[in-house]
Length: 302
Image 1 (cartoon, rainbow, N blue to C red):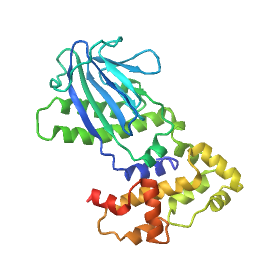
Image 2: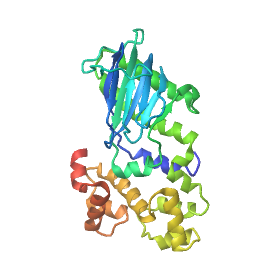
Image 3: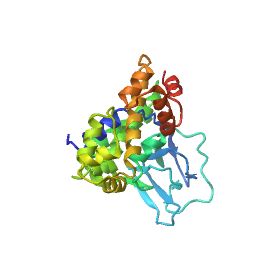
Image 4: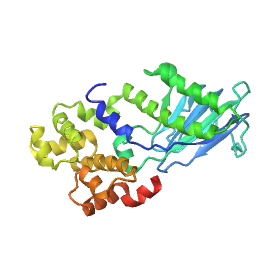
C-alpha cells in the first residue's frame, strides 16, 4: 500500500456505512421509476439481469446498463430508470415486486442507498460527478468487483433467512469497491489523495495524520510545508476543497466517532486523544462538525 493511500484507507476503516437495500425484484414490460433527488443519500442501482436505461434531468442521451452494470449517484441526483430508451407514459407499480429471477424475462434490479454524514461526504465525495456508470468488464478492479456483484445477485435470488441483512452488508462492500474503482480511474477525484501526492502539502498532512492529538495551527502546518501561511492555506483549500483547520476538525471528529463506539471510553480521554484540551471544547467542536452531541451519538451506537 502506497504512503499516499494509507491515510485514506485508515479513514475508511473508521466509517460506519450502514447501507440499506430498498428494492429487489424482477421488472417486466414497459416499466420506469423516478427519483426527485436532493436528499443526503448516496444511491446505486445494480442490474442483476436484462438491461435498463438511465435518464438524467440535464437533457443528455439515456445511458444503457447491461447485466452486472452499476449506476452510482454520489449526490442523489434526480434521474429516471426505465426498461427502454424512451420513458413510458405510465410508471411501473413496483410496490409488490416479483421475486428476482435471472432466467425470467425483463430486468432483475437491486437498489440501495447509504446516508453518509455531511462531513464524510465533504471529504470523500465532493469532487465526484452526479452519475457514474461502472461496468465490471471495463474496470481496473474487474475481478473482485464482478465477484461481489455475482454474490449479491445470487443472494438476491434466495428465499432464505437474513437475505436483506446480508445484502445490506454486501452493499457496504460494494460501496468501497466503487470508491476503489473510481479512484483507480480518476485519482484526482479524491482531494486527500491529491494533497498527499503534492510535494508541498504532503509533509504537513502526514505529520498531522500521524499525530492528530498534537496542537495544530495553520502556521505550524505551513512551516512543515516550507510555505507562508497564506500560500499554504490557499494551496491546501484548492486541492482538498476544505480550509486546513476544517480538515483538521473533520479528521479528528471521525476519529472521535470511532472512539465513542467504545462505551467504556471516558469523554475527557476521547477529547484529549482528538487534540482538545477540555471536554467542553471537544463537545462544542463535535456538535459543530457532526451535528449532534457526542453523548447522543454514543447512545445511538450502543
